[in-house]
Length: 197
Image (cartoon, one colour):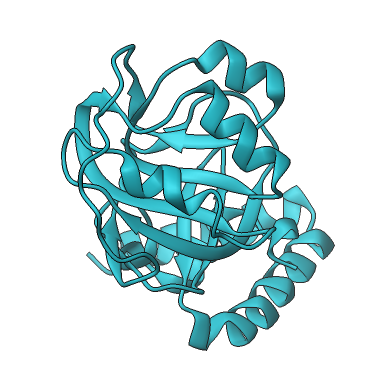
């Protein structure tokens, strides 16, 4: 459903509070991803719970991780390959990964803050699938996460159906409008705003 909806359209509908900060970005060129959030919290320097999540998330889920650590990798090639094999849609990480070449070759979508070669440790046992914060956005388990080349938007689960209907209406309206029509409407809006000063 949400695979057809650009993040720009969703951002227009939902506003900035549902858009993750630009530091979390697509690390290699991949298609738009969308799915229910499976949420994970990892303390700085520790990646145990992400490694546990890949065996617990349902196929189609987007694993979303709160960490904020850019010194130690949350995952590498084998973890991403296993997640991919098990049907996980993508990773969205407030942290960094390693083995980007392997991950890119495997075709597993990862959105993160960057790449670093050193792995984290595995010590901290924390609950899975609880409310977290990732990229400045509160993410609840089951919220719809949509990520593409323009960014990452979190659609609250309770609003998902309503937002999907609105987004499809916007896209249908845009598809019917020519560039000339858009320019005329846009210029009229801009000129009106300038005249109001």
